[in-house]
Amino acid sequence: MLAMRRFLVILVCSLAAVPAALAGSTASGDGVLELKAVYGKVTIGKAAQPARGLLWGQMDTGKLIVEDPFLGDGRILVTGWDTKSFTPASTFDGTSAQTTYTGDNIHFRVTGGKYRLIFRGSGIDLTAIGVGVALLNASETAVDAGYYAVDSGDWVAAPLLTVKAVPFGTQTPPAPTP
Image (cartoon, rainbow, N blue to C red):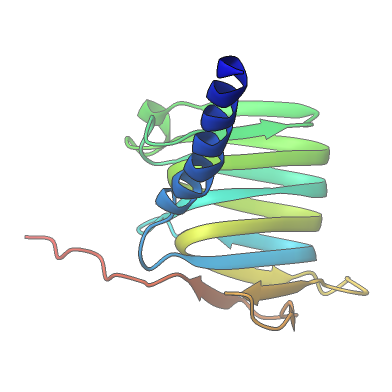
């Protein structure tokens, strides 16, 4: 009987801890960006202002370029690629490493920190939670270029023949340089 009570107390405590842990993983001002079946080029984060937060998804086929401007502040995991090439920080721009993945059925996950991802391909599906800017440019050869939504809003067709900046989360201006 005592073992059963202990088990129930542990179960109740763990059920209460999971939502608290999940709520703590997002910060005030975080937004949500969702992409569904996008065909073309998508850049999440700018070179001077990388995105931050969580991101996960998959791409049917194409190339994914990952830039990690602050090594060790989060993890970027990619699976399903056919080829991979790595450029260390010292030869890229001195601050960030760059890894390029190509193939079919590429899955990716960013578990926090700052990042910049560049996708060129088809069937790009992802969800990003945090702060950043996505640059969307659907392929002019796409029959259906895909869709995006911000903060649980309506799905909007990906832009053709133009690059559209889509901010998500509360944007803070970059700190002035002295």
